[in-house]
Amino acid sequence: MKDIRDNFPFFRENKNTIYFDNASTSQKPQIVIDAMNNYFTKYCANAGRGSYIIANQVTKEVEEVREKVKKFINAHSVQEVIFTSGATASLNTVANSWGLHNLKNGDEIMVCLDDHDSSTLPWMHLQNTLTNLGVTIKIVLFKNTSAGDANIEDITSKITNKTRLIAVTHIHNVYGVKTDVEYLRAKIGKDILISLDVAQSIGHIPVDAQKLGVDFLSFSGHKMFASTGVGVLWIDERIHDQIHPFIVGGGVTTDRNTTEVFYKKLPFLLEGGTGNLAGIIALGTAIDFINNISIDEIDQRLTTLSQYLLAKLRTIQKIEFLPGIAFCKCAVGYGTIAFNITGLSSQEVGFVLNEQRIFVRSGTHCTGGGNPLNDSVRVSMHIYNTEEEIDTFVDVLSKITD
Image (cartoon, rainbow, N blue to C red; front, side):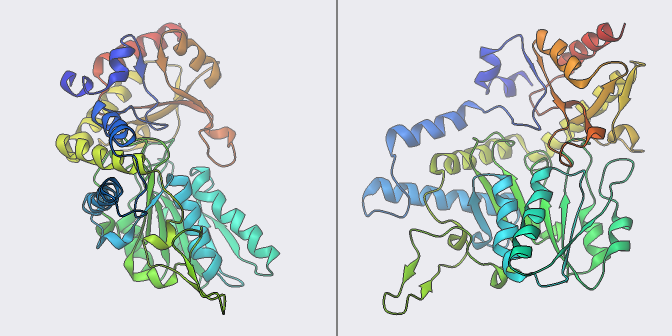
């Protein structure tokens, strides 16, 4: 574990800090930082815009990263891999590039208000937009189970012949539990599309687009050791004919006599403008870093840490758990546990922990428009966290509750 931590400058610069806010963003290994610096200092140029050597190098490297992403998530082809600025941009692109053009009067979209706002708000915003255009769609709400994963029985009971898409979260950003998406697909058949937010699962557990059976995957680079400002939208090739451009500009041609616009095919159809090239290149390096450790090793390590933290927290009588692995009957864990301490607000706990250089997240965590039921202290870990850090953290909590 020390060898892994040594890859991260943050821990060298902050030796007395415990970083437990990885669901917000992960720390960056030196090789990712170097990859970005190399782009800016050695071959900074635009991709696909020049005939000179460094422009060709950038273009080549961007497409190599696309191939890495394809393999990492087991996409059918690189045409399914679209670079975005992050999970929020990807999820909004689903609503605007698919929903805006394919939804008709009476169609229904299913969402869960306890999920991250980035998974739900694009559809509510689209509903308002379509209403202004004279098209009425319905947002159907489904619930989570008591453990925090999507309630598949509730979903299936609310499906009608008007249901067009279900927006689902893979691993919940507050509850830290995983929805059985393969089971959901088996229950609903292939006609209803599934948009899956994998921001909290990518880089934590294996994410296999083909095995999951979904139509859209959205994730950010910054939660998987890459930089901020870069992400991926994966779109299953089976629905490429339903996708329309969202942001247009350079690279789109127009017939000046008829004003007819000629669009590129995916993935470039949804990559208008200059992307975060340094971030894309660094994303490829982050994938290399994960592969060198092994995603299965990360998965196993997070389960170990989660179960260790849960056992330690159970020793504190005033701890009140939110839904999550505390309510699961099997030994699972994906690095995230949310809780409250009786008599203290989450912000008060966060302030005290901050004084001890223990960084956690407190609040409602971007869910349900600030759902007060989700107000909590959230601990979220990654591969570089340790049992010793958990011991220190729980010792501080114990003193707070005395």
